[in-house]
Amino acid sequence: MQSIPPLSSRLSRRRFLAASSALALSGPAFAQNTAVSGQITLMAYAGIFQDNYIRTVVEPFQGAFPNVKVNYTAGGTSAQMLGTIRAQKADPQVDVVIFDVSTSGIGNAEGLFSRITPEEAPSLAELYPEARAVGGPFGPAVTYDHLVLVFDRQNLNPPLTKLADLWRPDLRGLLAISAPPNIQGLAMTAMVTKMAGGDHVRSIDPGISKLRELASSIQTYDPNPDGYTLILNGVVRVATGWNARAQLYSDETNGRLGVVLPPEGSVFQINTINIPEGAKNRAAAVAFVNYALSRAAQKAFTERMFYAPTNAQADVAPAALARTAASAENRARMIPVDWAEIAKVRDQWNNRWRREIISVR
Figure 1 (cartoon, rainbow, N blue to C red):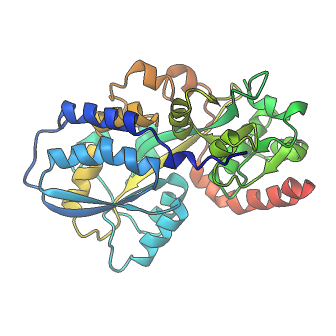
Figure 2: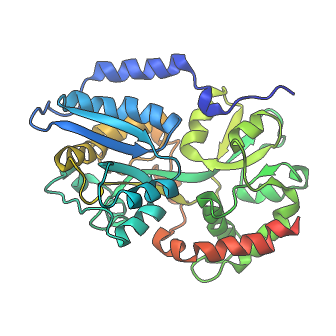
């Protein structure tokens, strides 16, 4: 079987350029501001996130702030980005960072990030209350994503429709499930615990017991290069994944990849946007944060890559919003998770997976 390269390297150039052209025609969302100047370094995710974020947010920001140059640095995983910020604490080289809330919370507790006020960044006042609350006085939520199940529409019959389908006998040996400490595994723990009638805040015992029953069906707990590509290669039929990437990849494969938000519930994955304490160009950094949280930027990025907006006033096209967890129907399915509390039990959950689930095979 011919191997298919990772999807992140195969995005449709035609669709990408079409989206870029549309954005260029729309012009800057803010009145042009020449008072703020200099360079800032934005550290965030690589691959398709970087490509699309530059087109939908960074470039329009530079159109609105022509005297500011944004240098985008791919920072690796959220844990690696936190390590970079720690290493630069005495001499920050990064002005803005976008990464997972479970790691930004650690940085907040360590005093690595500065406070951002609505007076500095008026877009903060337009955010959903939970988007403001998740970062406290520091970096708020800039994107919402959620865990989904991705499956092979071409080779799976009947199709996947719910979380409980993972236990179907015909899927034995055909699953790719990301285990803890990957945040997907942590989210999966909360979801399966709820499906099994439990509450992850009190005890994950029901979820661990149910996941142990699934062990013989799991081919890999560390999908590599990623679950989406493993499905297209014919290696597995179902994988865990993030909605934003899954929706984009579904489009890029003409629907070959099916995407399921389980009716049993899913979990938000939240990215925050933070300014390191002592950032060299704070004025430009705050301007960028304010723009990234604005209605225009949130609308553009959601419509391009299906991350749910954190700005409650973003006028996102209904068709795009329906493919996120921001629609009323989908938000009702989301399981409340306090990622700051999950961070405290992360190692414990990881150890239980290794001892009680992964070792079963």
